[in-house]
Length: 553
Image (cartoon, rainbow, N blue to C red; front, side, top):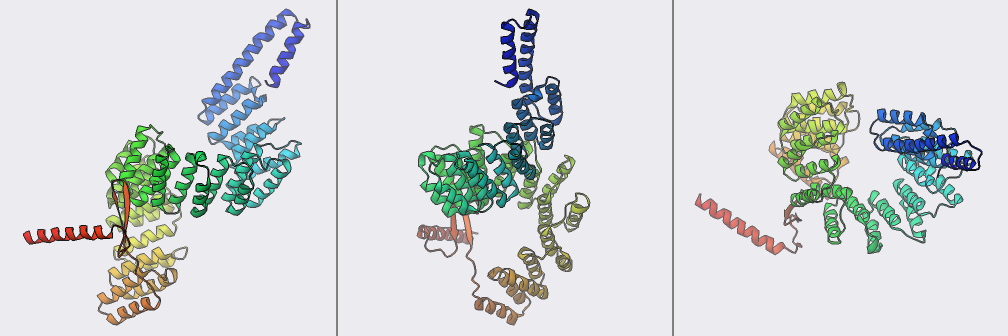
């Protein structure tokens, strides 16, 4: 019951004691009814706000009825403003309140924690200056702001304040502290807090798991997961580990863990599905990806844009570009990532013209491309050999869209020019690059010079690669093959000798195949594979059949 209603109850008592007239009594109850109705109406308006115009109208409704004095309603207004992406508007409402409470401060700190973390931290510091005390909500909200600004020293100061205030062992505060230290790459401090906790709730386990996964320490993450009580492992726990394996480029483990999670009757949420779809894309596991798509349809999971984007990416990378395009065409709302993913997928399949047509539609739709979009576009140009068009897009990046080309864009152009035989132009582009060329750029130049027999440029490229990638056998092989193709056998032999002297070993070839929803990995020369004998028998059988076909033809 708020203060306004308390005052009205007091006035009712006065009326019953005879201090009010009968007419005043009836007027009061009618105004009370109108006041309660206005309060409900304001709540309904806030629930249906979807843009800034709605917020302005709701604020006008509240101001004309003095509802801006109600802390709960005002806090909800601040929350709605921030949720719709107008944190500055929320702050402007707050500063005109002459009697802010800790409740309002907490809501505004939360609202600004992601958009303006510096101001959020300043508001937290102002709480004590105004004679108030931060509570169990204040600390998690301000620690979220610390994570957004990656300010470890501020997080440590707030940790000290939490200890002095007696909230350092509060479950939500402790969980936020572990998340803060992990996000600021100080996992050892997070683990100390975790180990010192007398009662470990599920949220605490999940925060520590996510902390290890975030820094790529999957060994400790897995050990902690195994130590976690089985009854406490929820979808968040499993997802933290699956996401960690995906981000550390270990898709096999991610997919295996996802299957284990299903066997434990844990229903995956959208985040878990996003993680495993990424793993499927890395491995080209089309059958599993298709099953996940069916799972989404069967369980009627909400098809948010990011989920559709992941499905498009998975289908494109797993070989089913038609299914990817079908999904893309059926999407009602497309983000810049959606368009970029489709362009990159078409380019990957060598459909450069189709990719550029999609980009043209993207421009007509008024969607502004980003840096990644232009990488996909230049890649599409490369696949169809459109050198002149690639020059146009490379120039448009800066002139039309204000995007400064990065080393990845220069790398695409060097590769494209090299494929087209414009070696001098490619070499000049490397020279004028704003940053030092990386291994990918010099590798493209080496491949191009090898293709067109430019031994001098190939030698120069290898010189730089020997510093950047001293153990990459492919670079030495390319130069040796270039010399051999030109009949310069002595130089070719010298390159091979350098490889032997530097102990540069040729990497074994690796291939993947998906059978019955399981991805198998094959490494050239791997005789330790338990299926090695069976594989040899199958290969002999295939060779025999091929020979019979040759004889018959």
